[in-house]
Length: 275
Image (tube, rainbow, N blue to C red; front, side, top):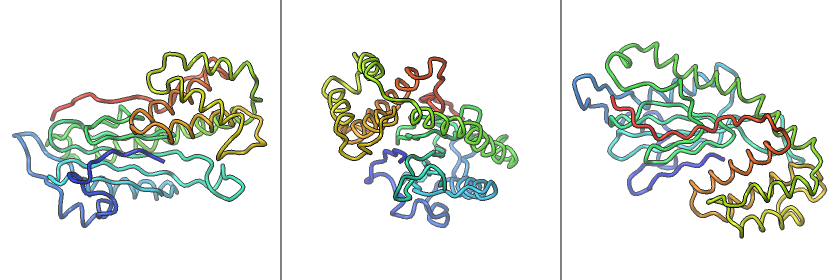
């Protein structure tokens, strides 16, 4: 599930109504902060974002949204429901996610995200950024309504381009037998990683040997991936560190079993793009 960091004292959350278009309209602040600065309505973006998903036959689920109480910053993430890749109980074995950030305070450009795990923070940092979707909050851009549609199209186009590759990665893990050599290369690759550490490396190996949550009959690399995911998400308290560690482990495993592997949706964006 996507990770969203927002202080509840300063942000309205999905539970407060931040995913409701009327709520957003009532609480967002669209006053310009300069001659050409023109904030993009988060209600408009969210409406168009959801409509684009529907037009493509995608069902968004597990939505998260946060609107800063000053009304100038908005974040949104969602998983794309899939009727394939389900476990024995009918639940998704993993999810692919999309989202966007819309900071109308002259700090960051509007940007979309897609990845197997999206991360977005109240300070604007996000993982899985779709660089071509960036759009400045200026009168020339916002006045041209077609441009916003194009940027949202870009987000979903990237998702469609990458989703098959993401599924293929999981498929390769599940078809590759887990050997002592692979486990040894994985442990060696974690040496010196600032997010995982020695204690959590041992926890991952212990969970491979005796899974607490995962399939004890799975003899594939998917077993190692699930152990790494379980440990990094359950034992790292800092959500940013947990996201970084989980992604690092996934990419390390993939690089071991597929030497020409190239990460998808892994760009980390902190660039300040003023209007």
